[in-house]
Length: 278
Ligand SMILES: C[S@@+](CC[C@H](N)C(=O)[O-])C[C@H]1O[C@@H](n2cnc3c(N)ncnc32)[C@H](O)[C@@H]1O
Image 1 (cartoon, helix red, strand yellow):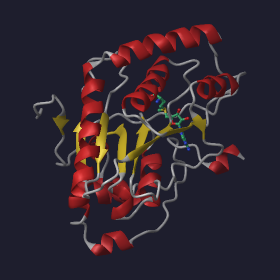
Image 2 (spheres, rainbow, N blue to C red; image 1 turned 135 degrees about the vertical axis):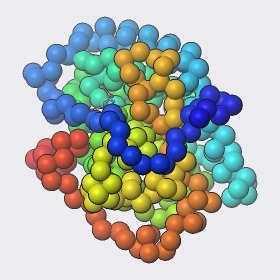
Image 3 (spheres, rainbow, N blue to C red; image 1 turned 90 degrees about the horizontal axis):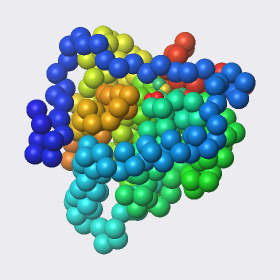
Image 4 (spheres, rainbow, N blue to C red; image 1 turned 180 degrees about the horizontal axis):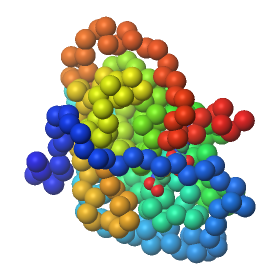
């Protein structure tokens, strides 16, 4: 079903459907990756940025985020406007991959169009040439692997927007676990693989046991699908905006909030964990 803005709202009905699964590239070094020439990477990034800026689906996503931020604003009757921070995890190896270039361009576009105060990024595959480009683009590099366990800014006037394109389920699950309380989740927006597509792509029992925080929050999440047809290379495939509204979070039973055990993953190829980097 599409709304008047052209977004598709995905129902939470479960079933078995093949969905996009994240595939993680091996941790990179300049030696084992085919790094493109710096000038080429920069030129191609600029072209991607032009495409992203003129892409109607991205424009609608930006409008939807602005709308949510301003509605949240009046719902909480705040006097100060919300400050926004943007965190980009799993952008990918953009000095050798075209989809990752689009994702970096999208991050930069979101930062500009949403007037973001602080932009933080991390991907364990990045090599020095990529870190240099990010620093030149005024992105702050997160210095260590947080495994997605970043607490959202505790300042009540800040909205934290996570851009996690095609990331592993464990990364989303960790983010939810770290912020497992309504006062944190209601100030979190997540752009990433659609939780409802995930739920459709695996047995209920696996979602419940391995990615329990995704499974628990899913019925209370508003999922706004992003039209993937307007950009090449499946750049936005399975991508959705996840909104955790205060109103819906208030309906989560207390005992669900009290279940706070840290998720552990064995042999999960979709996330690079600290133990693997040692
Ligand atoms: C399927 S790839 C997606 C890359 C790119 N966004 C794309 O769609 O082509 C998943 C990305 O998640 C990154 N990743 C894995 N573990 C991570 C972690 N602990 N923190 C941040 N990113 C991580 C991988 O390095 C990889 O670049």
